[in-house]
Image (tube, rainbow, N blue to C red; front, side):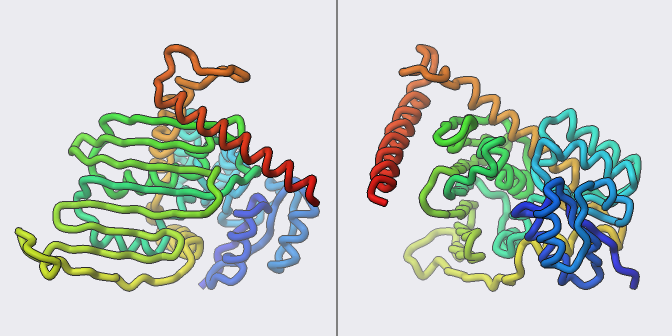
Length: 353
């Protein structure tokens, strides 16, 4: 079988993960890595035995498919060029910087009849894939995605950086339109929201409470689902699942509840994602998530950001405007206090060293 010639655009953290995986994948030939930082592209290309390019245009002309792992503001420009040249494209999330750009990319992919997949890699987490087998009409979902601050992602808020994965999962798990969204967010380390909590109300009555933070000292990523007959706990980081299932209509004691630990295939999510991309190309089938689903996730994420920024405090203000909800002001005050304590601690540390 002829190998699919593929390139990676962007030699940063995600680009290096994709290059590493593709370099070992059967049926795929990693042709090159493109990045305007020539030294970074060269280092990654040497490591995975391919050719470095400073111009993505030069790489696109040599391949059948690409992974776009460039910064979000470049997604539209790079994606349009790749799709225009009939190259199958896996675009890292989010699909674009705004909905107008997303719609242009989706429409061009349709016109050119090429595969356009969006990199919501959490969908390919083996624990999530296994949990989907047991999820049936969930009534309440709680998702927490917490981690330390990464300056590389300061250009976008935590909703587009992290929570967009969970938006994609909710759209997959709950077969009902969103009725209402309540959102609150706080900027701690960047000019965008670094902590966000969102409550989704769905038309079928389901509710999801989602928290994303990149201002936490420790990483924690998990999901709890409650449905009529079971409680499901998913550990994203350790790829684990616990299932508490009701065996009788009326529970008299714990013997009427079965605890199950489903077997989870430990394959890396990025490997499963790229294998799915390869299969979509070979079989000419629609990828998951598609460009359309990526666009839906972006639209919801931007609505959340609009709700958060509606109550932003003025820069340099000592207190919030009179119209700001008390909860917003309280959370911001706590965040300010935490930042002051951290700054003082860091200052002491620097003096001691």
